[in-house]
Image (cartoon, rainbow, N blue to C red; front, side, top):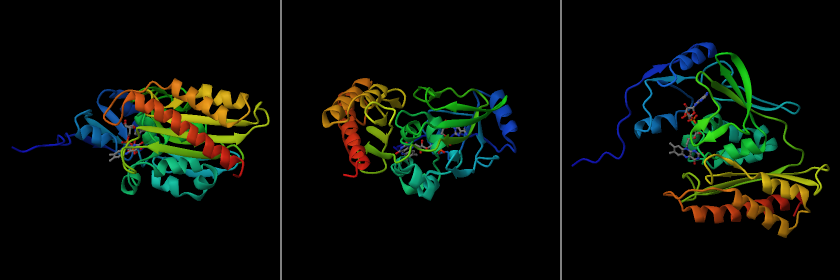
Length: 299
Ligand SMILES: Cc1cc2nc3c(=O)[nH]c(=O)nc-3n(C[C@H](O)[C@H](O)[C@H](O)COP(=O)(O)OP(=O)(O)OC[C@H]3O[C@@H](n4cnc5c(N)ncnc54)[C@H](O)[C@@H]3O)c2cc1C
């Protein structure tokens, strides 16, 4: 008896449109049958495993602007959709100004996979476990999208509707991710708990970004985002608000971690139980906040 761990990749037609207009028009005309792809590290695996069976795969990575990589102190970072995670993580500008994003990219799978995988693909895949999504949310990322009516922008806040579901409409092609200039003197950390040290999806992932803000009653603002603890990547808004309103002490950090854990609605799956996830969300949020707090205060 032969055992096939995975069904074979089904047949499909490979299309490489010459322009964004052509890509959007084709995708809009075949909403059920066509999918865009970049690195293909989600698309091909889902097809091989029988979870999706598109008739057309539309290769969008060579289209105009997809390879853009630009940092400007006033405009921030523009990351073309086809820029790989390795290129992102190795960029001196990203390491200097968006280190949380570099760290999140480096936490994904293996070096080999990251030569193909993109941040934009991670976002469009809309898995609650997507490792780079939390950093992009923390930096207030905005998607640049080309659709049948031309270009538009979409804030990442509110973009995710459920596992694999986003606000993208048929014909929409994400062309890049824009991160505004980072807050001055920010410190960030990404804590990822997987079943092994590297190469696994997260059981829980916590991104924390902190910076001084004289306008906040506490003098500080924190962004706290969590992976794999809700149907969508989670922004722990109540925990964030608590730390900007109250003096940042060890007790306040514990309280914020409790608020983050309370905001989670995790599930049981092969990686961990809901109970374990909630407790680890609490522990990792506290640990992340403590680390960022120490970095901000030079400890
Ligand atoms: C072995 C393995 C390990 C992995 N480990 C991790 C991990 O540790 N952490 C993690 O977060 N992920 C992991 N992944 C998942 C995957 O690698 C990431 O989600 C990756 O970022 C996807 O990027 P991509 O460019 O390959 O996307 P693709 O596979 O090309 O596309 C992903 C999704 O986005 C859509 N899409 C692609 N391009 C566009 C576009 N321009 N506009 C609109 N929609 C678009 C596609 O239709 C598809 O639904 C792993 C995958 C594998 C195979």
